[in-house]
Length: 500
Image (cartoon, rainbow, N blue to C red):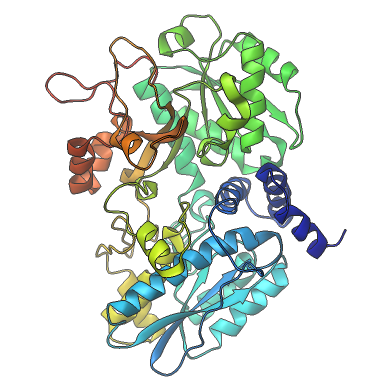
């Protein structure tokens, strides 16, 4: 079976887990960092089951002219990566339509050029080179990790304004100014994997009061992942008392869970795909170790609090596969810009209005990345690369498809620590706890009729989120979005909730 035949086979699968596994393995084989690969796999195959696309799975974009500002986009728009490519196109086409509806930038229309790297690093690199040499292109987006490492030297040499939509240099210390030898013209929109691990560490220790953590991850993550996990645990005074790995197609994880049980870990951090999480959750249930609540997790009766990465626990597929074994209160980490049900989140409406498709989350990344570049051109009053990079670094907050983001000369990362949020598995009938808690407003709106779904747990990051997004947080609290347990009589939130 050649790659084209394999791609056709994957598209015809009723179970997206089959495709997700192939895509994850392919990304890792191409040298993409494990956590980035996990997140991309989840975004791709959450999106491929919703929405509409033409027979090629591609949306054509118009060419540019002297009156059009063009942004080159290096992405995987064919082959296995086309799942992420379609998500990218939805966001970009919606963004272009909205910007042009507003009159463009300085009276000039905006458009984008698709550079299809397919599944080939060399091809992605070639598309970058074409854009870098095209005088009409004012900046470049990398919507795939492929070809980025090979292009960094030329990006630096040409000072080409570049935004990383779906790849992570920050977690490995390679984003300016962490590394002064890296290109100063590169900016990152993608949420760092390091922050995901630190979010779990902070919640485990400071909110739940755990001290012993078990770590279980898919073996393809081998490399920097375990070192990052240990670093994050140590930062918050947690001890990783047991580490287990499993193969990507593993269905039997009993021996690993038995060894973790012997450690008495209070929380279990799981990193893998949704089907991996489901297998582990079912294995816990078979051992009588299904999570109940925090007091039980601390009691010595092994029922660990399940936590994990957004790829494996950030959407409902893992709970669908786990069935009754899935426990309310399981936790993951994401960013506040991903709360697509909030009134401030405009991209969902734009995607529907301009493309006739359904936004599934993630479309804000390419939309905001494109906007950042063309807005910098407008702010600079020039397409000169040095001036555009300087404008990107000006530190002013930009608000477009969702929540504000910014860069500065000493910070080339769009996301800030105050953007990080916790996400918990919730059901349409909340657990009976003392004190009790209520579901958020989203269960009467976008989640109406859905039995269970991950949703924003407001409390753990409330004060940090409030520092950067005071108006948004005020609306979340006033309108009742997200799980706001435990809400005290004076209106404050406390961690007395036993489940999460």
